[in-house]
Image: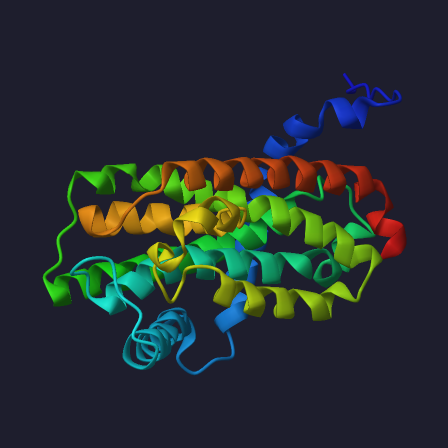
Length: 274
């Protein structure tokens, strides 16, 4: 008995989420391929995922602590303060940078085979998360080195990890779709990431921002993410500003909605544009 194939208008749209689950194996394959290719022809391989954030931490500690004399959160070692901010920021920056070129780099698939295009940028976010897990191991080693033990707040860390993922996916989907149509964004994204590194509280504490500006400063969704990570990891030494966290959460939710909406709106034209 042969299987009947039903063709009707709008069927692909109605089954989009089902197709995402049906093509989950493709997500795993693309993520594994991207992870393997990234370090394939390097001498020290995955060690780069350790060296880059570690060296950045040393530079930021020297600049903001030694030269600028900015305070840490309480008695927290400045290196821990910086690395707790580096963790979510590095994940966000990697997800945004890698996702922006993901569709173009997979043009041979996009133009020939049907599958939910959302899988491609999500696979790059998954690869960035692997680097995040490696970086988290460095964080644990630093805490052991400094004899710094977390308290009960560490139980809230999974919530802020999910927050970081969602805050990264929205902008990543938006710039991915934009880069397909406007190739100029391949030059804009590195500048945005570099600029965002210095306007986000990565190398310094959010407590140095005047209270009157904290809510406005939190329009950067990574402010809420980074402050949340520090609150979970560093405990009472790091202050959590609830109004700012709410503002960052709302902005992240908006970008998640807008990024997905814009991606889905332009998805049909990807094959033609690429």
